[in-house]
Amino acid sequence: MTTRRPLALLFDLDDTLWPIGPVIVAAEESWHAWLAVHAPRVTQAFSVAELRVRRMALLERRPELISDLYRLRREALGEVFAELGEDPVHIEGAMQHFAVQRNLVVPYADVLPVLPLLQGMLRLGVITNGNADLEVIGMDHHFEYALSSSQHGRAKPDPGIFHAACAAMGVAPQDAVYVGDDLRLDVQGAQAAGLRAVWINRHGSTAHLEAGVTPDAICVTFEELLAWIRGQMQDSRA
Image 1: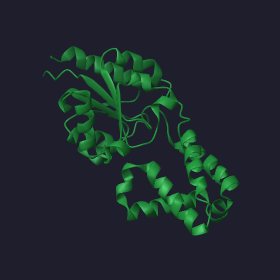
Image 2: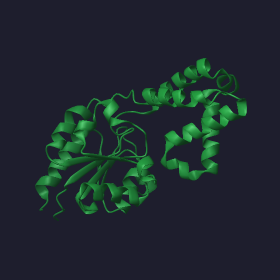
Image 3: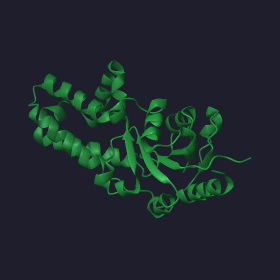
Image 4: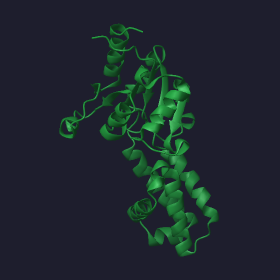
């Protein structure tokens, strides 16, 4: 059976190109330390974990903020500042500090060697629900287009964000492949929008079986992704 030759390869960022958990933990600790100096009432009243609880409570009241986690963090912090009588002049500095720390990511070892090879075969793009800044990180030159949920206004798995990225790149969804680590947001979301979806499963999870999700491919490494893409290019017809 012949499949369509892919024209574009789009990527999730966090936990696909780099591990994000340790970065966020370190960023929040550094952020809390910054607040201790500039807005001490906040850190005297709330630990890192308690500030996280406040953000989640705000998200429950305003679920639309799921598309812009930076705005969620800022507005939750604004509420805390107002409650405690802290000077709101420091909110912007706090957010800038967090943004710097949040972008201190280190790509998985197999990512940077493979991206240029993929770039030579396909047009590369990004669709993310996060707030990573590819230019700051130094990886923007690998991608011709990037779309975040904060820009689009809706988050994955909403099909609209996938369709918007494909339209901006001038490719039909059936000619695009999406690569991500999250079965619901990335794999199901992309497939529901008409794209093929590759699940990056670095830890050998069988969650797709339990969830009843069937990715178009499952890759443990970017080398495996490269091999699968090469196979798609060879086995398909334009």
